[in-house]
Structures are given as C-alpha cells and as structure tokens.
Image (cartoon, rainbow, N blue to C red):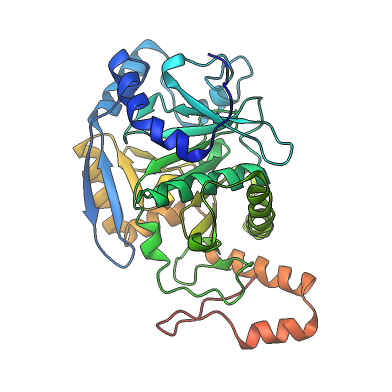
Length: 372
C-alpha cells in the first residue's frame, strides 16, 4: 500500500484502535500476551514478562544459526535485508501519513508488527533515512504533536528512538516509536528544576549520564498544529536535542568510546531524555538482557519467569536495577566534564560565574549540576 494524503496526528490516533484490532484479527500483526510487575524504590521500575517472545526466539534459533548480540548487529547492518518501512506497505499495518515540516518528507504511521502493548505504532519517513542519525527537527515536532494530541484525549503517549544498533535499533530505516504508557522515568525526574528553559540538565542522582530537557508547556500549544506551529515547535526542540547530543558525544569520547555505541531518546509530554550507551545488553548468569530506550524509561523486558528471577538476583548483586542500566550506559562524571567544557567554550565569563553560583537545585536541596 502506498502512502495516502497526509492528515493530522489526532486523526491518526482516532484510527488506531480499529486498525490495531483489524490487523490482529487478519494476522498482519502479532500481539504477545505479557504480565507486568512493579519494583518500588527511589527509581521504580516495571518488569514485563512475555513468554511467547522466548518461544519465538527458540523457534528462530532452531531454523537459523544461533545469534548473539554481535551477530544480530551484523545482520541488521546487512544491505540486502529488506525494510518493512519501504512502500508499498502491508495494508493492514498502514494507518496514515502526516506532512513533513518545512520541506521535509512526509511521515507514515505503521502499526508495529510484533507488539507487547496495544496500538504500538511507528512514525517513519516515506524515503529511507538512517536510524543511526538523530531525528530531524520536523520529526521531533511531529513526535511532540502526537504526544500533545493524545494528551488532549487524556491519553499518555511515550515516544522513543533507539539511536543505532548499539542502543537497541533493529532496523536501519529511521523510525520513532510510540506506546501508550505512564513510564516510570517521569517519577525519576520529579523534583528537578530547570532555571533555563532552553537548556538541558544532567540528572544529578543517577549514576549514569542521563540528560533531561524541559519541553514547552502543553497548555500553551495548540492541537492540532498548523504548519507554522510545527515550524516554530521544530525551532524550539532541535537546539535542545543538539545541545544534548554535543554533551553525550563528548562524554562518550571521554569514556573511551564513540558515538557508534548509540544513544536512546525518550519523549513524554513534559521532558525529552537522552542517554548515551556503552553496551547494547547486560549479561549475567547466562542471561542476556537486551536494553533499548524502554529500559531507560524504567520498563524492562524478560522472556520467562526464570529470566525474571535471574534479573532479580543480578539487581541484588549490582545494588539495584538502576545499576544494571549503568553497566550499559556512561558514568555521569564524563557527562559533567563534557558539560563544564561546553559551558567554558560557549558562555561568557560573567554567565559562567552566574552558572556556578546558581546551579540547578532539586526541591529537596540536592545540587543538580552542571547546567549546559
């Protein structure tokens, strides 16, 4: 099926329930049953168990050669692998299109063929663009437009982007993903303050580098958005992402890695989050836990009760689930060094002094520095 006339995000969201049900009944997508348990604490998590995923993996390994993370990344990068995001689409998975912003190509909305959450959908350009690069300014704006449209319907959308195979990307073709969920990540940033609304902040209490950007207040934005509204929004969001990536890539370099290791991007109604990566998976006791953006949103996935038990033992050994995420990320100190260097490079001496004297502070009094 070829892309059709572009509509607004609200129209797409209205089509989703019927489209998902029809695709599931027709066998165009597979929905995996799962159970979820909560892990309370300073940084709460959800752990989802989906046994059918383990059965799918076992069947795949029986039909093909065994596949580890390195083999998986090589297969993902193989040029001969066809992309499900190239038109014509599977008719049952295509929901509609939204217009490109300020001359960018249109974006198609496709249902995720393998879903753990109902109505999991993807936003991808109609022509191929690399997943290893960041979303464009217009794509960021359309992503937030979807989140905003859902909010107007009292729905919580979480958008995420796996920046390269090292961060969980399974396709080369650029695509943003959306699930309806109240991710634990938003409780992790509760209490953080942002003195400068157009600048990101490093989370002060996580052991790994987690960059948080405040987003424009939703109540000040129209929905649906006009073309001019989207251009204005793109101009506000793009600098936030670029400043975050500058610090993330410098931190990766200081940690002895490089940007090819990947990064995860999350967007909620209130914040954009960026996490540079050091490894795609956490390995312990024979358990290989692949971690993508949802893991850094506090939503971890295991394929069996046995894997869940192994994860619990690993968490106890590591001092908590948050330290498992740390093993696959970058120590916060490298981000703080990069942020200080960025401030020295770009800010005048008076503003640097002001920044050091008035560092961001949590509502409980703990420092949230450095600012970027």
